[in-house]
Length: 290
Image (cartoon, rainbow, N blue to C red; front, side, top):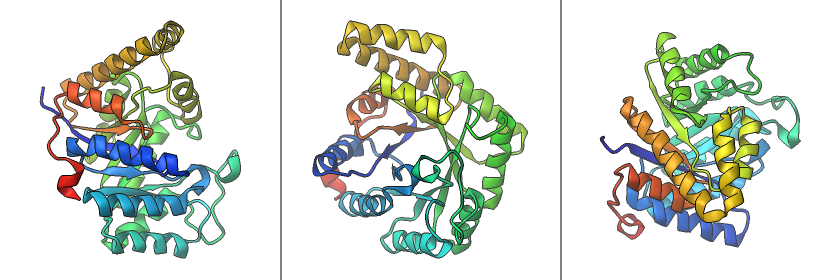
């Protein structure tokens, strides 16, 4: 089994303590030579400024590629493109372009009166600048707002047609979920890279709620295994999470997947352990590239 190329998602800190956790996560994962770190937006664009600051600092201090999330939420076209221009000026040439979650917990997305109507419009505008490598979201389980899995595939094709270079999927719990999606995308004529998103389960209660919000299907056997592990204590939970995540990734690699994107939640240890089990060896330290 050939070791995969990996990338890692982190979220911007809201407190000093959270900032230290983010930096610790970066120090732990940087030696694995990731393709990039991605830095998320909060729900409804609530961490827009923090995302910009975190992306700039992480790129400047590490020298590693950083992909900043950019959404359509709560900003005009001009404001959004100003943010993108700031990323380019800071040397950040990778963007994860998303529609974004509705503001203030609303049930449905409402575009800003002068903003982008959807992710495809944002992708097209970014592509026209010629400044960015553009990544987008993909959903191997039906998106909560979609009518079917085919609708997910149709939207993804429109994103690629608008100028996207790569897709990163929402997380899932069984390799077959991604493999079926990958095959269906190929049938639809999609030939660009689709990287599976992997969630090492740090806390099952939180992961279960997250899955419900984003439409990720939780197989009953996964629910039962983690419920039993939580009852028996934290050590068993961590062993189960590591083994389950490693097996999922191994199954994907056996089926020809070459890239993996890990949702770290700024907790690096479990992600690091899974990567090492997959043969991803430390290559550099953060001080080597700073």
